[in-house]
Image (cartoon, rainbow, N blue to C red; front, side, top):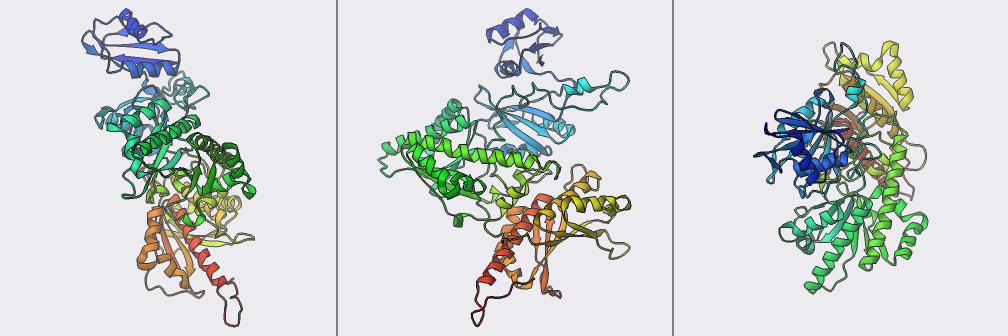
Length: 602
């Protein structure tokens, strides 16, 4: 059921007049109007009709001298943590909207809804109903680029269905969102955000033509292709190329890409630009191997089928801040458009396969966010430090991108490591994780059952070190095991502390972790003038410190301290291990006096 509330009505308004307005705008209804003093209710047959009524009539139609307001009718018991925000400026950068939404609380998901209006519509889910209520109060009517945002609840009809019938109003358990809700069920509109966006690079000199006078050209492209297009023109000042991100269905992305190529070609002809302009597609390195295929078969087939020449940037071009490879396609516009379809089809298949594999591990750490670990580029990301920086789960910005879910280890290692893993069984690591002293009992469990189960499920050795003294506020948890076991064990400990309320409902779980590195490699972790450690902090959002004037222990090792939330800590740990791997490999390649290679330290 899609019940609408019609407000700001004159006392003279009648059901006949309302029916006439809906008929004039060709909006069907499934029940008679229920008219009260100053407001009315009506049911629409489906969500599409309800959305059309809201977009076409609310704040735009006058009846007896008063402009009517139309929105979803949501009783208090059905007010969920989900909101629909309409009248979003069409070319508003995602990062701006992300920041505004995150000011009100923790955003669990954010997805764009296809509409026939020029302005954008997004569905947002907050972590709690209270956060959604605050966002409703503060954002409804909020001005952005002269557009007043319109915020309504997305009703949770299961609240009414599940509510006990007698004596306990509103205390029943909440069910899953109704199938008719935006973004849910087989009849839902396409979800733009969870899909892999198309990212392309265009010569900077053609960006103005793509945007057009006062944004007319890009607005027309957006409307024709039903896409959300972000042109990151302010990034990389002075760069020869600028990235463009297209959010839409696969067909919408392809249509937008072809249209942009046609605009560039026309502008090149008008300006007597004679050089061939290739199509450059950006893709995360995690997907490129499968795009190329065994012995390059997949890529060769795409070239043959589309009559194009395709090259891919080398691994050496990857950096901490740039996990994307550039796929350059040479050919006619028609040929390049066909190649784009095939390339993105392979990339989307890879993404879907990864997601399927991740979902098989749903018992790993429920609720982990894929985007926060940098597996996929953020939909609003650009070529810069923000590309892989994990967003905060608290009041900080959280990108509207890929949906939450369990995180698979194969994909994680692929995203944070490039060619640093040695053959053979994974090496064991030791991490010292510091938890509140009061939380020790929760981690150990009754008769040690919880810590034993934790060790069995994660494959790591987990021990609680003795307290340093009677008044100590922290206790050290010693975790020993390979990288995957470390990820699982630490993740479960973070989750347990949150679950047991050792941190407030709006407070992030931030812990300090210590890892030991060879004293000879500490300089590589720090980098010249602190460059590497600063990059690590910028990349991971964790605080990384190599204390000065440390005395190496009996194994000639020193401590690196990492402080941050789980995602930040994990990314920093993996990057440090990657640096150590590179140091170790370089040492192995150095010949020793007499032509012998150094023995590997055990």
